[in-house]
Image (cartoon, rainbow, N blue to C red; front, side, top):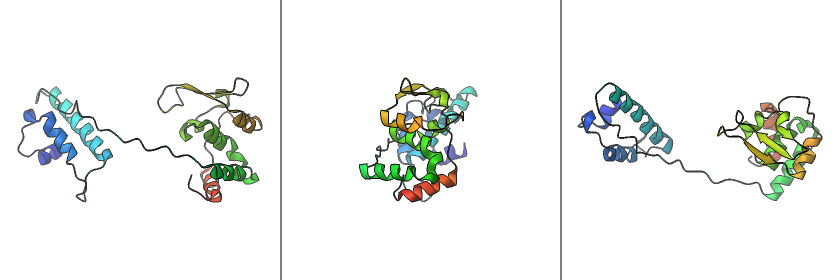
Length: 187
């Protein structure tokens, strides 16, 4: 309510309109006076919307002007490794010190599965005979399961791994840091 009073000092709660809130969102500034980030704008609209819903429940206003306001988050461009980077990655991955990373890195490299999803994979989700990896709903970022085909090169990497552990798992942080340093390029 204090933020609302500061942003709209001359407006009554019932008189807040979609246009006024949208314009305020577009003109938001951060603490340094620079234009607010997309993240800050999204939070502004979300918190104001929650407050306005509370006001409706309390009978203080009839409408929520934030309902139609959408803050679009730009989707970053996908980055791909070059062929020399892939070759370097494979050669470093073949070093004995980095054997525990083989499953984790090869699934990420050859199947394109998100890091957090790989960490939650069970060996039972990987079917080498049918050449499929099942990212089940409990493991997926979007909470929607999907099947990812296993390329022959990935199958050869996975076939030689110890499959007695239930999870692929997240590799130890220090080992991963050493691996990244050995690569010699940001990854």
